[in-house]
Length: 252
Image (tube, rainbow, N blue to C red; front, side, top):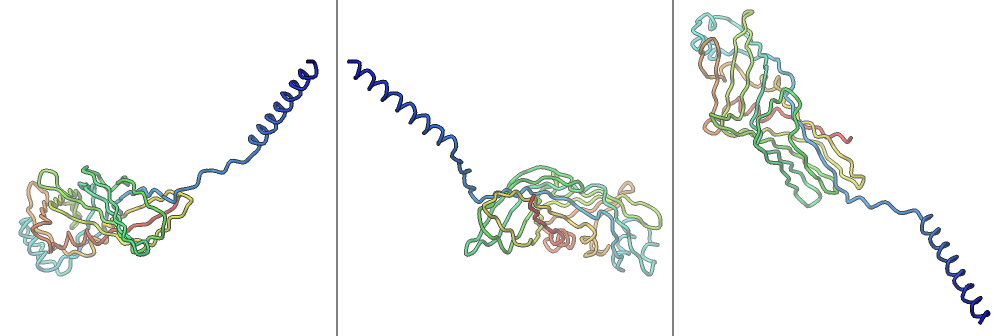
């Protein structure tokens, strides 16, 4: 009986020692971190830059502006440039689209919204999740769309002529699609977050225009320009806006 008891105690002691050894081995093992899924977030922001510039006055434009302002002397100047300064650029942001090629695949991603933002300050548009891959032929589209109550663009600024500031308001209704072409974006397994910075160059917009490209009215000392982008699809201001945006992707 004593022999059986001692054998039982010995067996229990051996089990306890083996359990402790196994526990220590498990605690000392290095646990591999979970594998990355190869996705990355791109946070997009938009900002209008270079809010000051100038626009040339062609002959037809000087005459038209003289009639609008009821000042015939405007048309008599042999050469004339008007300085523009924008104080606020509000857009009705509706959609951000990302398009690219990843090998044989075409990638189309978008973020939809409906809000007014002043793009003279850097403003967040939204985030897009990109899968693993090397994205080529990258294009970004910012759809801006509105009506007479909530316009697509509401631009407030001033024209400086002969030392006098003339307030100007530009209201654009309909759809305008700002477009930018970007460099290749490579997404690896590190899951790095990217900043996508969209810049609308207002000075570049103005270099594509002449004063004759503007039509409007002069009321209460303000020059008011109204454009329907849907009816006047060939409007030069719309075309200048749609082709003056750039994009840069920067890893954090």
